[in-house]
Amino acid sequence: MRIVRAKDYEDMSRKAAAIIAAQVTLKPDCVLGLATGSTPIGTYKNLVAAYEAGDLDFSQVKTYNLDEYRGLPGDHDQSYRYFMNVNLFDHVNIDKANTHVPDGLMEDYEAACAEYDAAVAAAGHQDLQLLGIGNNGHIGFNEPCDSFIKGTHCVDLTESTIQANSRLFDSIDDVPRQAYTMGIGTIMGAKSILVVANGDAKAQAVHDMCYGPIVPSCPASILQLHPNVVVVADEAALALCPVE
Ligand code: GLP
Image (tube, rainbow, N blue to C red; front, top):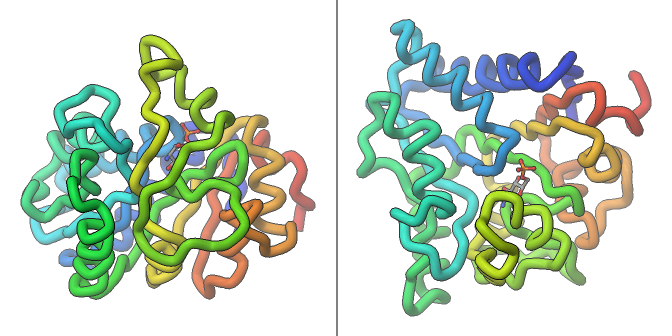
């Protein structure tokens, strides 16, 4: 695991965007695994700016997002499909048909989740998977639990995640209680992984991800077993990590 120290959120966002931009430049038809949340918004802004400057071409890029709230349609302003359109897809020359977000309204979800994994595998797996991290160490919506769940699945959100994400909804009662998420196996299938984190609320989770025991009570800790992970985090998020 390589840790890149950023000065602040802006610096983290520029560095993370530079890594994604390098991937797109080196392999124009790459497969990107993408993430939502407030952390990657600045990263996406920098990618849009690079596209507008003529430095990036998304025309052959394929994307697979990590997760989606169960029960939210793609046009709901808190759905992750909507987030991706507003923060990235609507502003670059990506073919929307090449963008994939789990369908929050899927009916037979076990079959649909298996199809999502099969589609990621058929695309050749993610060349680069972008991840944020939850305050409790979750990645995607893989919440702390007793085992690492391999494939894309439906998950019950923890109270801590519902609480953390309620800031984006009108009221906490509006936060969906379940979500679909790529499983740990789906994430670990990526050829390279980029984790972004900022702020002191993430400090414990970032420490446990990088230095804690590899346990499903901190889902991000599994990333220690992946051969190609870069963590780009600001000073506050790295406050509990040793300076190497
Ligand atoms: C959400 C998402 C995660 C994200 C995390 C942190 O629940 N499912 O993919 O990494 O929470 O979000 P934020 O970046 O807003 O702190």
